[in-house]
Amino acid sequence: MGVKDICFGIDNIIRRIIGVMIMMTSMTGYCTNRIFSADIRTLHTTVDDKWTDAPVVALDKIMSGENHIVISFDEMSHDYRRLICHIERCEADWQPSTEMFDSSWMEGFNDTPIEDFTHSINTTVLYTNYRLQLPNDRCKIKMSGNYRVTIYDDDAPETKLAEAEFMVVDNKARLYLSATTNTDIDVNKCHQQLAMELDYSRINVTDPSEQLITVVKQNNRDDNQRWNVKPDITTADKLIWQHNRQLIFEGGNEYRKFEMLDLSHPTMGIDHISWNGETFDVYPFVSEPRANYSYEEGADGAFCIRNSEYSEIDYTCDYAWVHYTLHTGGRIGDIRIDGWWTTDNDKNTYMMEYDESDALYHLALLQKQGYYSYQFLQVKPDGTTAIPESEGNFHETSNTYQAFTYYRPKGGRTWLLVAYNELTFP
Image (tube, rainbow, N blue to C red):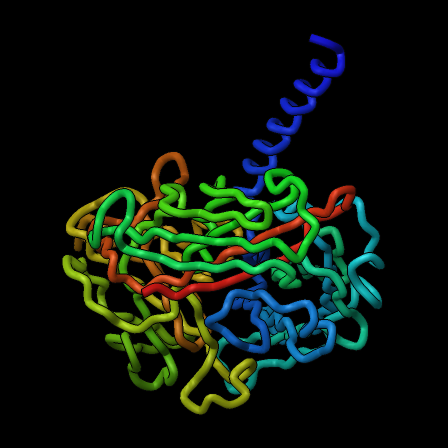
């Protein structure tokens, strides 16, 4: 064996190690929102207020100003705070892009103040609503990829208050999705199996395994995403995933939901509302075990701030303590509430407590008026999650799947997002 062969072998080993490292870091790096301060609540990222959609915007539409990324949140006081947004571009694994200057992916200025803010009006809980729109007259995005916006106070720039993430896609490749309940695990029972086809004929790919990364998510969840699953078929310009066991997902059950539109009386999913002298207490109906599947249209974890007037909602909706109750038939370990709105960086915030006296799980959270969809997840000792048996697991459940493809040109300095597709099944 010659020196060249040895070097080639070492190079392949290094590439594999790097690939594993990327996969490991990616499992904790995903598009999400995070709140680090008790002063911040109700962090939401949307494309033009389309609250049921993942925060993904087309490059041509954000450059032209046809579509906007909108980031909104509440600071829980009426005090003036000069809040600043810092934008950074990230790689496919959500690690910061270190080989690029800001001018490579944006036009304008970074670290700009958020000047669109309004104090709450006629609310029992005081807050100030902040709203950031991209692009704006100070900043425009001009490259596809992953983006993270960090919010901090100008008086304490070393302390981040919150992070919001979104993606910009330049659809140079075509990604097709389909799904079936006839899976390689069971047939019409508990699972759904995704199939994908990626047509990359319009981009210059010489080595798909090195230049392409795929990510698949169910209901925009971060805890069960599938990172760069190896395709079953590779052709000159296509990758195909068929009967791939790594693309089998639990069907789960429909997300639970409630809506608090008017705190003077119960609305959808609310048993009763009371006033404790300082704030409102809202009690959704007890979540009972679900032995059978029953279709109920939902939003797969999404939420929408609104009230019965549906006017000036950002600063007229009040906050209330929402008391969640789950009946599982006994203690089944750690249970966490999960949805797009569970953005506290400390996930223990959403862990329920089991009360032996009434054999129920309980949790109270301060939430803004609106529509909320959510699910209960069982958290295992190793940190992974599963659907509690009491919630049911059915192939008929409606789930939304999101799929992304990242591309790195030969000699390129960064990963570009070149394909995105979404499928609601069935």
